[in-house]
Image (cartoon, rainbow, N blue to C red; front, side, top):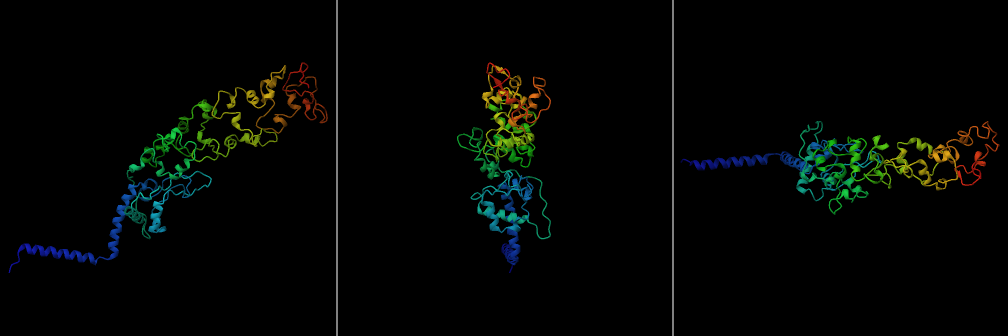
Length: 426
């Protein structure tokens, strides 16, 4: 009896299906699991790119992204061997637990700029499992070399692009910034809410995120950055161009390529006063003015070390129209702010005193009393060579050399209002 062709076709298909099913059951479980892991890893790679993990960890987790002052050699670690150190549950927890301060290479240095973002509640469990599978796939087998990394960079996800999304990669740094005087200022706000607008100083965050790894894509204020001094200062002068900084352009410090960030640290200042780069104003100035540091250790000195006076009481480091960056028009006017009793006017003036206090005094420190540049009587004899008294050496007990020397008699040396004070006697 002949079998109809239709029935023959059904029988063949049914037999083939049974063979396929039997073959599937015959596959070892390890091979089936391997196929599942491979599929999960492929999905995990898409998750890795979807959430921008490659921006900090590099293409396919290869690392090498700069992270200044981090304990891992100043770079973000590669993920190639991460799975050997962590179990799946540990990897998941590290991904979702939020901002993690990176260990510093120098404990006293700045905070490394890159830190893990907050992914708890952001990545669904299914994607998290796939991501862990992908991280596992990056680890080579024993004796194998790491897989070659593609040089083609994936597009940065949209949620990372923008001027207000810096906290995604820089969460620890932006959290520190909330204690900064600049936080909440008009230049760092958007509307009425206190949103950190880092682009006010650093330039476009969108350009930076889209061109990650390019040092030219953002203004950086560290000393080793590729940004020029002019670019750094221009960012500060957007807001700080008036007041005591009116004469900055063309000033001594500006002409010597001094950057604002050489004296001030914005993100992590060393001093609570005026965001100084060092513990106080004095130490900040001493970074360059080492000779003044030595002078202030002398026996006769202005009360700088005691904290009663500071450099900016006499000098404006941001520039003035006067010599030596003085806050007043002349040296004497500067001195008269504290020593008003020496201002006069006097009936009998002492010409070198009226001309310049520095003729006799060294304000930063001296080994002679009263900040004198030379000890008496030699100080007076620089001008009074043959005036009445002999210039020959005197015994230490002579009235011309003992104690206050010439001022034993000429005590009103800064000027006299006495009708008989032509010689500045008492």
